[in-house]
Image 1 (cartoon, one colour):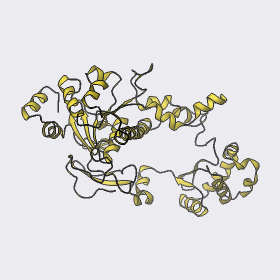
Image 2 (tube, one colour):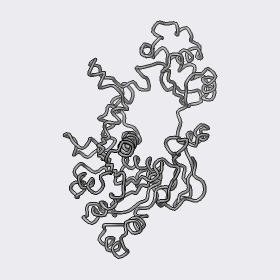
Image 3 (cartoon, one colour):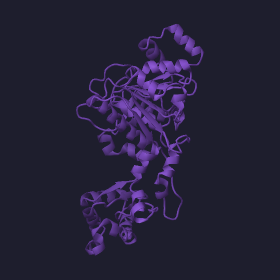
Image 4 (cartoon, one colour):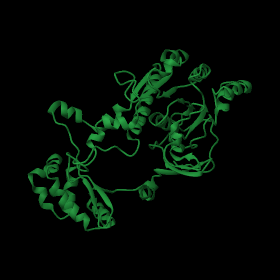
Length: 413
């Protein structure tokens, strides 16, 4: 799974062992869900062409930490993508996109509804150019409805979805995540949706189609059945801190050396093992101990037993004891501790890849392991317009004079 040796020169060379070898993707999206969809597709062999505005490239390039002006997040979400600068709002830029669409399987965009249509790139126009095209449209709230035209970011749908309402301490404010949760969930959902559409097209003899993906709906699903609970019972689930209404003991507990560990007892047998380990096997005989929801009603008692036992021991001692007892526990890691973890290292969940600007980068490896058609990181995120000449010139056939004219006008980069 890891990448060794010098970085390959980006190109259309076959990735014969990858499941998406031969699939062409145009990534016209920005921050963050759409680019993540395309990163995942690229990791598994798709030829991804990143299309950015010539003067205003994807804002992901400036998100987060940077080294010598090179954004580290961009280096990951931009990996396995060739990059061109193309102004789609210019008629010549739109015409060039249509030419690329004729050779494309998937187009991903996240403009506000109506933007492509305003540029003369409606679904009907795209479909006429390529009836087999799959168009993934990513927006905050979907292509229709009263909120369709609203600007949206993941933060807003994390608030609306119920996630923020359920996150935090019972007596504290709603809490937002410190990372792109909604976008990341939507990105993984979007990659799945694209694969369903390609399967329908290629295995079932269907045509291309439009996928309407909002940021809101995937995270609503991830938050769980709170709307169903409200609809049937009139109950609004509230913040529980690190506890759960579904099982107990379930919390974060501090060790004697100042670390934190997480415990979950979703399986009843695990709850029994935990209570035996911490010296209170008698509670297992209580009638209320038999189900997770009933145990949750006695969380103060159970947390007192478990928390007191853990507070008297170091993290190393707690981890060893839980492992020996066959009970479930995990340390609360910082990024530094995650990098050093033996399981992460053994499975190469993080892998070092060569980078043309920074020498070497530690990145998340591909999302999943496939025995016969594995994914790979072939190169990291490239500079804006790094592949414009190769794609528009060598592959699309524009001569040097025409490219120079378009550059002078700011249509390409």
